[in-house]
Image (cartoon, helix red, strand yellow):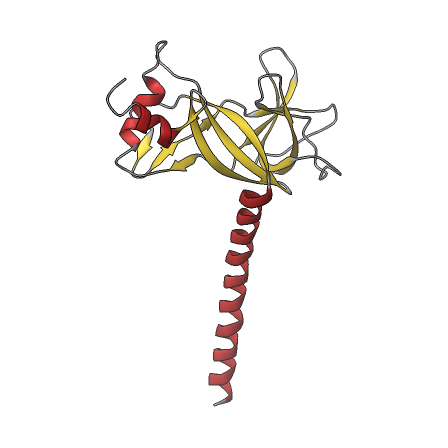
Length: 192
């Protein structure tokens, strides 16, 4: 009888721990989405053959490197803090990567791919954004693909907004030519 109670108690403790971990992640994401600061990131085209799988749009950020101060060495997959700034076009840019949480301002906690020189020989910390999918109705995904790839120069301007709070970022919206994707698709439903 004692062994059965102990197993049941252990089961309850493990179940509560699992729910707490999942609940904590959901709460952090919801807080970022509701109260986080908004940043706009330019996205790059993704191979249109593989861009849409099911009900999401594959996202690849144009921004994948942060300045790396002298002396900063990073291992592959190491956590790094990257401050966010806004350029003159209103798009997010990365400040210098650091191993310490910034005392103020918006930042993302990202996985590093290491520190390498860029094309100009500047030290850069390669980082991976935590989101690479924008979920939407599966029937609209092929239309969204055509919208991104069908511009006058082969590709329209595409950006996403990300809400950021305490290092957590949540993908909010996909825009084409500064119009939310769902509205853009409605406005261009007749093939304009």
